[in-house]
Image (cartoon, rainbow, N blue to C red; front, side, top):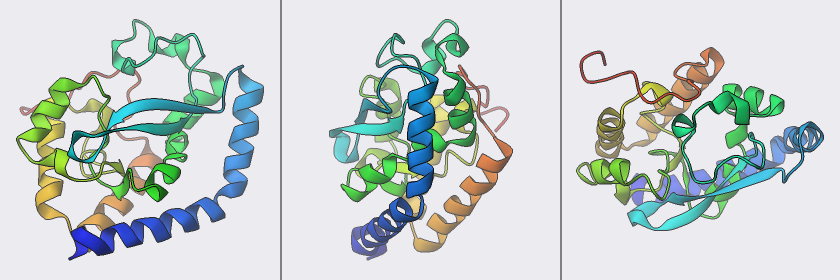
Length: 203
């Protein structure tokens, strides 16, 4: 019952409340991004949604406009050279993810769930298929994000996403939510250009 209806209702209410409360932060960040470098404030990217459908995820732009498109950060030769000054702060604090509140309101994402894969990350999508992790709405944050984030190798990330799918409940979502706050404050697992250092042997 929670997964089929209550979760979506809570997501909508919390996202709408968050958008209203955080509106001053949104305005400040929009101005900072615009003054810091030329280009749009928001960045759109094609991602994989529920049941492997596609949608455009929204983020605050953290890279210069000449950065190669649709390429994961870890595949760039020198990721730091493409990230703006404002972008470094936004990524470290995860504030670049705030516009995804709009994706949640639209029903494309949930607050808690597997992070949406890039449209061309076939390896991650295929691994998630084994665990039915493609059958739920992707999230702003999730179980994998508080257990390694950028440091996770794809098979481990997919397995953790599968664990989330098996354990979906209000209490488990709360655990993921508060775990995310702790991880963000500590900047746990944030590795620019990270390809995944936590494997099955050390996780």
